[in-house]
Image 1 (tube, helix red, strand yellow):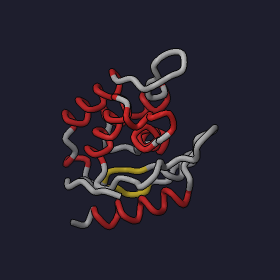
Image 2 (spheres, one colour):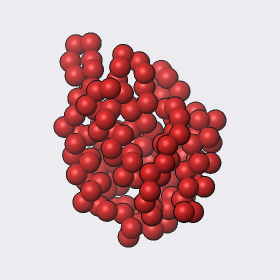
Image 3 (cartoon, rainbow, N blue to C red):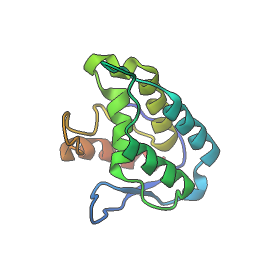
Image 4 (cartoon, rainbow, N blue to C red):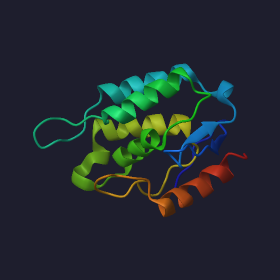
Length: 146
């Protein structure tokens, strides 16, 4: 697990349909222009695909875009977990693609700690793995204090 320095403080914010949603305790510290710029890079980047290049899925893209417009609200777990899927997925070299790199850049603008493995279970429905989340959150939460 690696860490990135910045002053964003995240808190768990369970929602009725999303127990892993997060919210910024200090949204005024978010460099919205930097995050938006990195998100544009994610949207324009491509990953590997058998028939055509892959993109970050539509739901995650819409959730991230909506959150950037209102960063005081909850960030859905699907939005951030899909980023980790791309930059930590060894399958077919996805993490080595432009999209994998772009997702890692956006992640590092948001979080201090990088998970040691993707946050979701592989395969459909690609939900957050509670143990993987717990390991990452422990480090993320601890590093936010510095």
